[in-house]
Image (cartoon, rainbow over all chains, first blue to last red; front, side, top):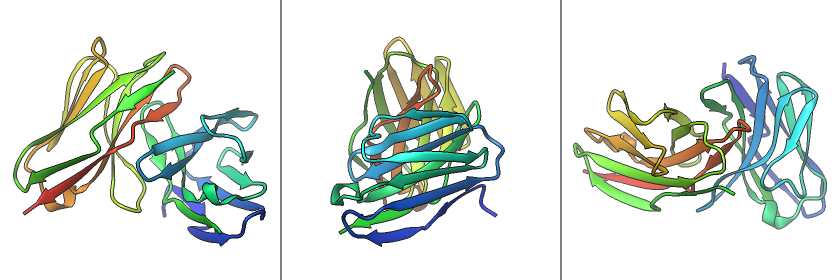
Length: 110
Length: 109
């Protein structure tokens, strides 16, 4: 089984809809991250969490919110989706060395 | 602020050696990472440098010079499966990772 899982893997939604992307990990790491990836822009940090009670904004948090339900679960919400939030979204966990990424969620907002 | 720069695209021939450069400016440096990412897939960890010098891992090596804000990833004996994007990332004192735009490498037969 994969160490970091994301659901859904693909989603098409309409402008103005609320959508939640979920991430679960079995690595036992405290640190979890949400990134979005756009062509030519690399990975950009949306939110990160270093434990259940710790939530921090990243570089591009506007229009997003997160919830850390447990050590293993970190969800990303788009309260009112807009077309420029169309992107590939990755969840990641980290120990003191590397990051481990989930398979990604491809989100399209029409 | 933080800024990371990499070449956008590179092309090399199967069996050859290629060097992918990364320059960075950061307010607090706590390690430099290289990831490989095939199209549509998740990034996977390749190497990590926190001190100056060369780290070797099989066909892949990574070099760091903190005083110059410079790193490179060296890929030897290129194979077709090495065609991918290579992401340079800096970890800062806040334990966050800032990624460069990635270098898309095409390996030709």
